[in-house]
Every structure is written in structure tokens, then in C-alpha cells.
Image (cartoon, rainbow, N blue to C red):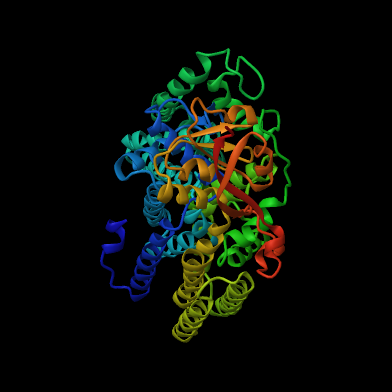
Length: 556
């Protein structure tokens, strides 16, 4: 990242984009603080924590049970960060942010090769400020890793195709990393663009070239650590009960059930798909650029050139994006964060369209972006008051001041002003999310708050979780957590006190057998599924549940 943003440029417009990128990168650092969110982020963090606690980097465990869902690389990266920096939310999020920056670097490299440096810089701004990328920097899962690995693979394979065949080595390495993050389907969004391009341009000889078969062989070699880990944990132990059945092959799950089983809804993990899901998801997830993106797509459809016929750039990038988007849309298992993997392609497509506009169309789109800018500002201010975030008047002053200065600076019609003004709306969103909204939201994540309370008041004692388990408690509890679902399992070998985390409604269940001392109660809400009743501070109390930390002693 340092390399691309320190290169000199005599072009004032490009210099403006460099400055914007540095500002965005700096503000994104604040996403590292605050905490790890339920459910997926806290789940992944707790799995990585277990790797260190059990000194076991091959087996994936959740609450003491074998876990077969995602490949290992995400957890290896987080656990490595824990090893270096200690177990914390900061250490869990840091690798994802660093790889996100690496992905921005590869987006610049790819955009510069396929288009022009100006378009590449605009695309980097668009990618780094897309609202779902901003959210994913805080609520870290696996998608930022996956996006970077697939983008890097596309870049190196493109260089290998155009000139330097040895680039199949780093290309295959990054593709293998993507596979070890999400599964074998990652091959499709990486290679589909090349396949479509070679077929349309009748370059059939590419399919028999040794370097591409070598590339696939290298991918197979690079994913051996994942296959070995799966074999050790699952295939060597057919007696284990996984998904309520025995003889479960981790390797088969990796190659089929995890991805194609979900796509066809035949695997052990099922979903319910909606073909239009990612159409409306993109509308908010790719803000503040989504309207321009849809206008660009509509314009291409009107000209019947959504794939393109002239340039490898159009074919490779657009085919990759189109195939991946269709794959997601027709899948029976859909989640909003899946779409991030194609955001770099969306950004290049949108930046290319924006750069080609004449003054009249550019003026119309500038007005649209100004409206979006104002709407985002108004909506964030409304949320600040409705949710009743602390220091909301400070946010309003900062937002209005920043917005006014940006509007004055970037009011005139130009591509640079349009990009910069839209980026400022994302910067205001980042400021609101990282400094005001998420810190307040996490107060209602009982597992995290309870775990932090234990760190300060009972850092060394054993702790149990009884019913209503929370992944954030698993991660933030200072020691290993024992999980029980029956009162009889709470029996201790001695008369020493026990500390138990449980739903407050279940506390009376314990009073007949134990002396119960409530240490602290914690309000709880499923904070990744926000509804109006919770967002409105006047009605929030009715939507909350409660968890308690209690101290148990045997009745004498």
C-alpha cells in the first residue's frame, strides 16, 4: 500500500485521490477498537482463542465440540495475531484490516494494468468507502480476507496470461488461500472471467497450455495443510458425531457440502434463497456508489454490452463479477456479506463508466450524489438521536461541519469533486459507526460485557456457562469456559464457589440446590439484527433480555 500511495503524480486529480485514500486508511484504524461482534465474529475469535488455549492448530473446536463449517486459514491468521499480540479484539481484527489494505493495493495494480491509473485510484476509493466494507472492518468475519485473496489471484493470473508465466505461482498461492478461507467455489470467481474471455475471443489454445495445468496443480499443493487438518480431525475419526451422524468426511465437506451442497441446498447446512436478494442488498451495501453502479449497468444493458466485445479488461472483470453475482443470487444460502467479494469488480466497472461521462451526464449524476450525500447525513443524525448515542451533539457538530466544508469544496461538476464528495459521506459514516454507534451498540452484547467484567473482577477463577450460551462470552472470558445444559453438571468436586453465566430467567432454577449470589446482570440483544423497537431508545427496554453472572456455593 505504501508503494502505490507514495508514487508521485503531476496530476492534481490523482493527488486528491491519494490524499483521500490515506485519510480513509487512517480512519479505518479506529475500527480495531470497541469489541468483537456476535455471532460470526465472536465465534471465529473464540475458535482462534481455543487454538492457543489448547495449543492445537489442527482441530477446530466450539465449546469443546468438533466444529466443521469453515476452513482453517481465517482462524490460523487470527490465532497467529493472538500469539504475537495477546488475545484481544484488537488482535483479532488487525489481520483483516491489513489484508483489506493489501486488497486495495492489488485493486490499484489490477486497475492500472487493465485501465488507467486514474480509474484504478477512483476504484480504490470506491472499494474502501463502500458501506459494507466499512462495516466489515469492524464486524470482522472472513470476507475481507477472501476479497483480497481472490483479487490478488486474478491480478497474478492476468500477468501470467499476458507476459510472465511465473506469476502462476503467486496466483495459485493466493487462490489456495482463498479456498482455505471459504472453500473450493472460490475457483469460480477467479477463473470465470478468463474462461469467458478465452471462449468469446476463441483463444482455445489457452486451455491446453501447460502453465494453467501447473497452476491447478500448485493450488492442490498449497491447500494440503487444510486437507491434512481436516483428515486428522474428521476422516481419521469416523466414530465422531458431526451434524447428528457418523462417518462424516471433512475432506468431502470441504470439496462439496460446504459450497455446492449449500448452493443446491443438499448439504447439512441449508438456507432459503431469493433471486433478488443481492440486487437490493447491493443498493445499500455499495453505498455511496450503488446508484452510479446501477446506472452504469443499465447503460451497458441498453447498449447490449454488459460483458463487452473489445477489451480483455471489460471481458475479464465484468465476466468475473457477473458470474459471481449470478452464483450468489441463485444459491439457496445467502448472506449480505457474501457480496463484498465482487465489490472490487463493481468499483472498476463503476469507475470506468464514471470516467467516460460527458459534462451533461456527469452533472446529472453529480446531483444524484449530492442528494445521497445529504440523505446519508440526515439519516445518520436521525439515528444518533433515535438511538440516543452518547455525545450525539458532538457528532452532529462534526458531521455538519465536515459536510458543509466538503459541499463547498466539491460543489462544482467534475469527476474529482463527485468522487471526493461521495467519499466524505462515507468518512462521516465511518466516524459515526466507529466512534459513536458501535461502542453504544456493544453495551447490549451481554457475553462480551460479562467477559470483560470477569477480566477485571475474577481473572483467574473457573467459570461455567449454563444455557443460553454466547460466543462473545467464550471469547472475552479470561479463562476456559465449561459449558453445561443441565443443573446436575454444575456440581463441583469441592465446596468452593463457582461462577456461572446464565440467562437471568434461569437463576431461580438454581436456588433449591445452591446458595446463589448475583454478581451482576447484563442487558442483551441480538445486535446484528436491528429492529425499530430496539433502535428507538424509548422502546428499547422492552426488547432486551438479561444475562447474569452468579456465584454458587453448595447448601450446607
